[in-house]
Length: 222
Length: 222
DNA sequence: GCAAAAGTGTTATCCCTACACCCATGA
DNA sequence: TCATGGGTGTAGGGATAACACTTTTGC
Figure 1 (cartoon, protein in one colour):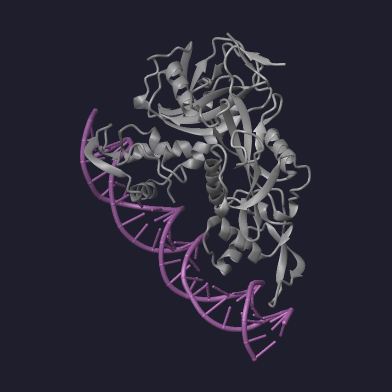
Figure 2 (cartoon, chains in turn cyan, brown, red, purple):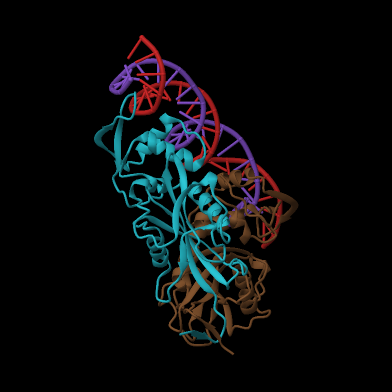
């Protein structure tokens, strides 16, 4: 069975840059390609748009199929379409970026890609297609958004300490923050509540545990 | 001649929301559709991506063909792809928005669309497809960008007065600004220079004329 | 008691905001 | 001389930035 058109049509894919925080590092989810082109290279999870499928749904479905990752914050990033970006045929890639807390991710389940794995952003392998460019753009957008939205909260597990949250901000912005000022600021948003619990985490004073009052919403602030 | 694929492919278009400032109003460029669907409705300029053409080039080419408008600030906005957004076939639209100073636009030249015309944003006609949604998003992005970039300068003619520039900001942000504060702020950017000339524009003191030191660059500020 | 991270306030600085009058021109 | 928009400075308030010591725990 084939499909005919009067004019040539490009293929459309979605590709997703999924970030998480693992081992105190910002990490990115990649899958190893089992087929040519770029066989053996690592690539962003993604794939071809089905003909009756929404763009967002396609991104979510491919992610679920290839990596088992589900239930994450997903946002459209940019659409890439250089004519030579895929050697097989003309491919337009609608790219997304996504954030998932480390405790929600269960990579093994349901993966039908050969391999899926997390890589620290500082140690990315050779990437297929123009995916390095996509990742760079996603990384910039993510850093910029920490300044005027609560997007960073999407990387947090259900409960966390203020120091943990501060570390996430420091990693995303790639700069050291002042502890007192950070706490004043983040508490003034009124989006956190104490659980009442404390976390003993070594030979030192235990930290108060917080949770988001509104875990699924990303707020625009300032 | 037809083109065959093993899997169904969507069509890809670009559509552009072109803004200008005319008669002290923010206006949008629309073309009247000569064919079904939505025959007779107004729509954003745009059209199908050619198979060897960059996305940006497609947006520029369609704009040039349909409206004669050329040499403008163009930026990708968002990609729309609801499965039912076009009744003919599945169409993914990569949308852009663009700004052009009123003195650069020459609508008549080279238009091959039935009609092209400027509409004040407050008085848009019935629009084809999901173009109303696209325009809304472009309008929001434009207003937001006045706060952290010099994108508004792209609506200015080669030379202008500070009052004219202030008016543009007021229209984009839809709020009144303080004259002294605006002037202090805009001059502190160090992106304007006096031409030395003055503009006599009525029964009152003539205004100094300014130009951009760097007309083609949009600066990220703050 | 010592090491290590948690927790906590005050002060200085900067930026943004508010605000009113004189100037140059054409009629 | 009058009407009209052009042009100018200062002071107050709010937010941000800088900064150091005490607390609680495990060993």
